[in-house]
Length: 199
Image (cartoon, rainbow, N blue to C red; front, side, top):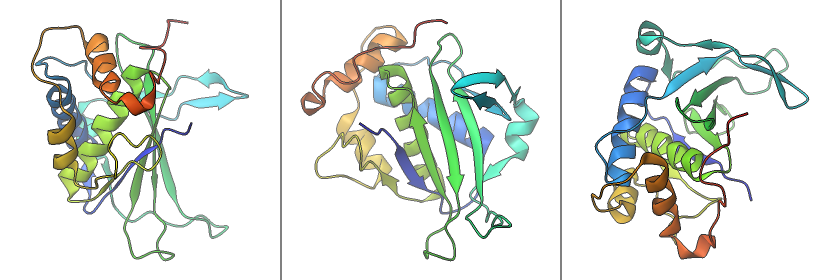
């Protein structure tokens, strides 16, 4: 099962805005007041599925200065331009890959943010909060064509939050992520793992 969650980026937003909004969305979805910090990492490299360069964590100044949603130059071979980042969840081994693509001129839409999580409850819920935050902040549309939390799909991020958020209750972050996804009976207990085991 592919688990990409997507959002069109209707206007440029800073990564600082995104991280703040994603944490607020995460708290609202899970019915909790405290969520983990989210770290944005650039230039992380892999070879044959193994990490060979841990990359560089963006600090507060980098997050304020870096935007997504601007037009991205096409590559020399004519392919659409893209930006690759990773979002780590400190205290967990979970992470989400972020790919920002600009398909112009093939489509009339602007850049699109695609969030690809590890297949764990924590990673999927973090990816969901990021995609919803991008759509909400920028005035874009949310797309969940692959997991399909709601049937039929909804593109308005606020509607998704309102329809799926948990009532406020005590509980640890990872437990609340699992509880959030288990409310969707049609997922059949997917994802099986709550969080990534430390390596």
